[in-house]
Amino acid sequence: MTPFRRVPPEAPRTRFSARYDRFADAFGADRVVGRWELARALDVPPRVPWTAVPHAVGDLPADLSFVTSTSHGIVVWADGRPRMLSPGRHFGLTLRDGRLYAFQITGRHGRIVSFPLGPGHVPEPGGGWHMVTHLYGLSRWVHQIDFVDDELVVVDTLRNRLLCYPDVDRRSGRHWSTPHRTVQLTPADRRGRASPHYRHFNSVYRHGDTIYVVAHNHSAGTGRKSDVWLLDEGFRLREIVPAGGMCCHNVVIHERGMLVCRSVEQTVALDGVDLLTTEGFGRGLAYDGRHLLVGASLFAEEYADRDHDDGFVDVYSADFTLLGRVVFPRSSIRDIRLLAGDRGLSNHSREAGPNGRDHV
Image (cartoon, rainbow, N blue to C red; front, side, top):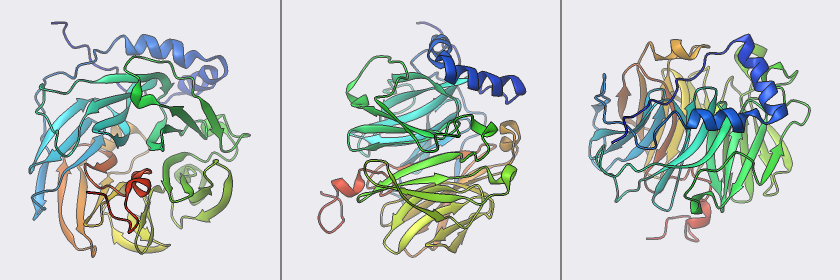
């Protein structure tokens, strides 16, 4: 058996990396170097012991099952215990037809991978975690990903754009990162943090005929509060709504309005009014009509500093009563998806019945 070669660690941010990001975008170097980085990692996750295992605090529902991406790996919580699905740094997650799709960081680049995962299929580590690589050579600054109908939408946070790939789930090989189409939300601001009005788009979510995109606006560096951009189904801008907070993440439409993580303020807002306190930098929302899951982590500008404290996922009931939390030692939470009925998935409203409930 070929020994596992670890995915390269996430590269630190330096003056060189900023220049490289601009060079890679201008000359397509992402696809070339990204392929070389991909060759350094095996497609089967390793069987390695955890140095710290997530644990539950409080009275969590026995049937609670979710998956979260963290700074140390993708973790599935089901049957009251955790399983490590894939080690290494990951960000965006989405579910479709019994598979989990994730963005995995590989050095200065990243790739879209998938694993078999669903409510009725949660295999043990080392037995059924067959990983498929779909796209490589992406910028390492990708945040959320989600399917909108048959198209995988990837939020390229560095370059203020959405990358759209049709039929990704039907491919079983490795493909480079050329999208079917690119939605450049702010055409004048492709230079990332060097842009005069850098938006730091990080979250995408379709509900009904509206696509919501969160503009984080790099508030910690610019002082500008975040916005939520409302697009039509052709990705044309309809309206910009103030998020009311700084460095905001995530949008989920609740029965009572729009939920947004006001990350710096450490709150979750419902239609512009603070609803919950996160006790940390809020990032990651999932909701299925019965439970609301909220992720929180230590806030720090540098990635290495974010793992000095525990991250956690708080679990609330439908009436926003805190039931308990799952603690992830010395980790930061990136994204969360419930394994069944997650209304934070863009295709959920299309798959639900006429009364808004899931078909059974």
